[in-house]
Image (cartoon, rainbow, N blue to C red):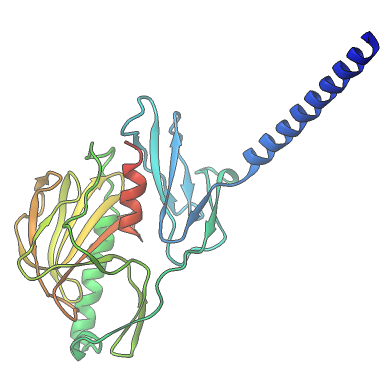
Length: 287
């Protein structure tokens, strides 16, 4: 009987060792797998030691902010562009070959082509109009390049109005059968005069009547995070105003290049347009 007990003990011990070894291999395998993120979304980098890191071959830097619910932790948003493929690497500013984090980019199945009919002068431009469009584009780029340290918000983000999505982020667009582009924001149904709310606390960075996006508001939320509101009818804030989440900042309209009244709502991270609905979902999960 003692002989059989010894055999059972040895068998159990061997099984335990095999299981332990297998678990160790699995853990190492899991640890070595790169995290993933879809094109057009964000990757939230979390750390307790916010060391300087770059991406996009050193052209962009991470901008850290305190974690909204974990004391002593920091987060930084890494935008994955609509056209990005392969991997995105985070590395030291002085050691471009030393990769700290690799993010595998997955391709999301965004909506296919949308045929949109607008006024012909919103598709074919005179030299004067083309110059205006370029100047307005440069103004936006300059705005996004202005980085306010930290985060100006301390609560979850909200949608600027409670309405259905008429055109999601990422859909391919053809205007009057000529211009091909992708939709960098989310269109929400809104009749002219509908109150538009600020998605979160921040500072009004730019208020401008633009040729394509119409009456537009840009809000700086800190650390390279901006929300944008296009095709408005009326401004209710001015540049430099500090605003609160849920504050009425404008009334919706049909200005700019549109086929009808609606709100174009967007989130821009370090100059890259990302899916606003996905951004809100990911960030709010941090609370």
